[in-house]
Image 1: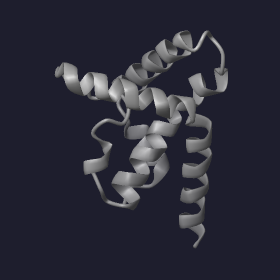
Image 2: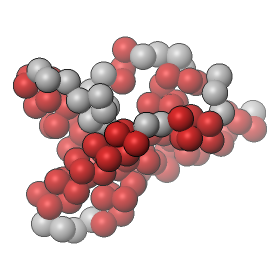
Image 3: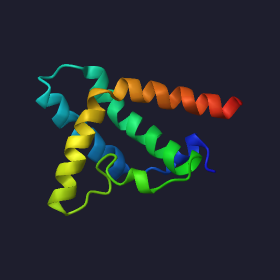
Image 4: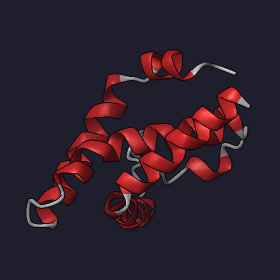
Length: 108
């Protein structure tokens, strides 16, 4: 397993750019409210992907999380857009739950 700090350092710039652009679009759709969701969305996506891939060793569930790598299939883009908008709405809660889960797993 890769530690979280190394996983974050290895994340490509495109991952952060795509997810922050998507977060800004959702922020605009939401009427420029919920600044915390705008900031926490890419971090929550990164923590969820890390938890699924590294801790639970499951890659099947990460296909529609975030927007990197962006697929050229329009149907998958629509599904990812809708699903990630829902995740954007609860990104603060997701970040908190994923962070607490990782801390709990680290110390137990």
